[in-house]
Amino acid sequence: MYLKCRCECGSEREIIIKNLKSGQSKSCGCIKKTQLQSRNYRHGKRGTRTYGIWLAMKTRCYNQKFHQYKDYGGRGIIMCEEWKNDFMAFYNHTGEIEKGLSIDRIDNNKGYEPGNVRLATQEEQCKNKRNNHKINGECVTHISKRLGGGPGLVRKRIERGWTIERAITEKTHAVI
Image (cartoon, rainbow, N blue to C red; front, top):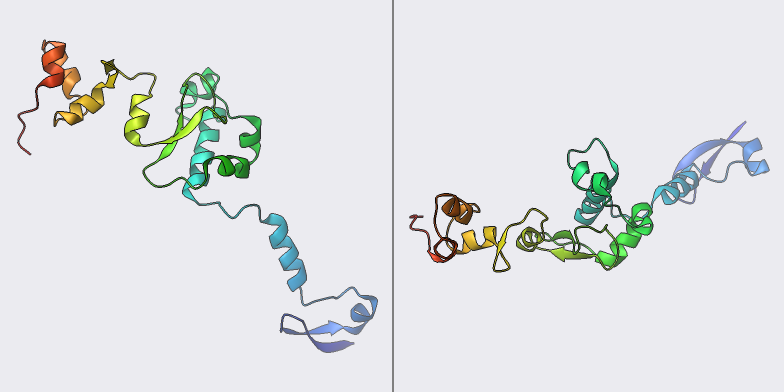
């Protein structure tokens, strides 16, 4: 036998009377749905820029099939255990990472861990690359852009036989 009942959430259902008396039916199913949602809800940051950056860090460090693994996990770059296993621990350290900024390791021979990461612009990242070329402590790419050329301007000038002094001081004659 069934009895038409109204749940606290407002929906109406026909429920078996025996299940009502025994306490087996406590709602229309909304309680179970709410419990399941709260159990599966972790931090609400999935799909954010910061979550994507965290996921990319994990991929570089631990996915051997990733094309850049050799430059990260393959040479011993890892994430600290706390960040590796807990996105919110990473998020609490960095906060929401704004557009135009990314995560940068201060010492490229150490892993992603508190004290060795900072938020950096693309230009700052360029200055901190392992394969970066510097003249007088300044990134060659940055010098090239400052002179009005593309990122390879200074390198190409030096390859053509220019002196370093001339290559890094003479503005480009290109018409934009």
